Length: 374
Image 1: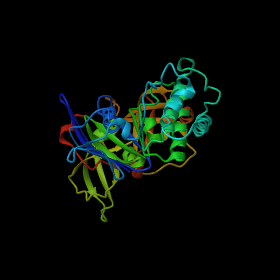
Image 2: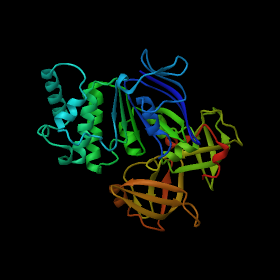
Image 3: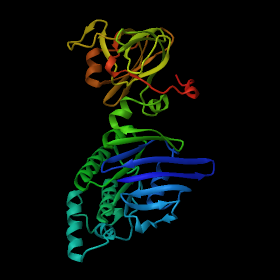
Image 4: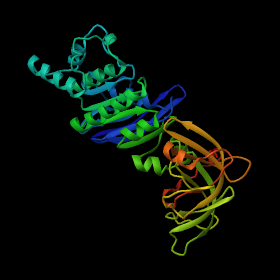
């Protein structure tokens, strides 16, 4: 288990983070400049924090109180960078072998052969980095890091330089590697899809602070703050007023921007409370389009009459911008292309949308300094 808690000031920027990584994959997710890569550099030993500690099980990498600061080569950290950082004068075999720190030549050759097979690098052992594709280079970098038998694996934007089809394959490789070797792993990314696919747990970081950390479902579907919701592209975030609460206190009717819906009431909501709620764009359902009836039965809760303002094609999906007035849209709805085609949607078309109560999340923390973000 990796236990991290440190502070590092660089100019006007302060990185102040605390988290724990067990045998799973932790994704550090956030925008550029939020402190993600700096966090990995500090854990690896490239940069010394001002104070705090970094511990792996019972061993300390860094401890400001006790004056401990292990050098990079004593930490047992595997580090994979976005730009691969392969040695250009070494072959694939030699690059991977560079990471091996123990055992004889025969054992090393066996380990390298197994890693090449596992990472689909067979037949490339005599090639040099300039002869490899981007995906092959990244797999060699990963193999070199694994060959060192690291206690911790750090991956800094490992897929950012790769084409989309290659990224998908490398993501699967990383998941397979983790299942096989069970190394505590931290992956840095600003790609939402990558974070969702790879992360057992996700830490959302911005401006040097971790805004929320939790399981994938907790972070993606139950953001702790409006800021986290925005960073994770929830899109549909609303201010509302509680109008009434059910007799058992389990549901509340809230009003926002000219529409009313029912939400789960697990936080002792009271009539008159100001709240924020959100729902992901893929969770809003189009119940009925004028002139077209869907075969599937939808939820009868939270049905809102709306109009299509705009439509954006995004490869395998379409985003529908819908509103309840003629002034502007309120809702963003992501639809698979098959659903979009079936609905025959177009600008100006009247539709009915559903915000399923179980998928609407009341944000527990209302931050006063975020009220301008509607």
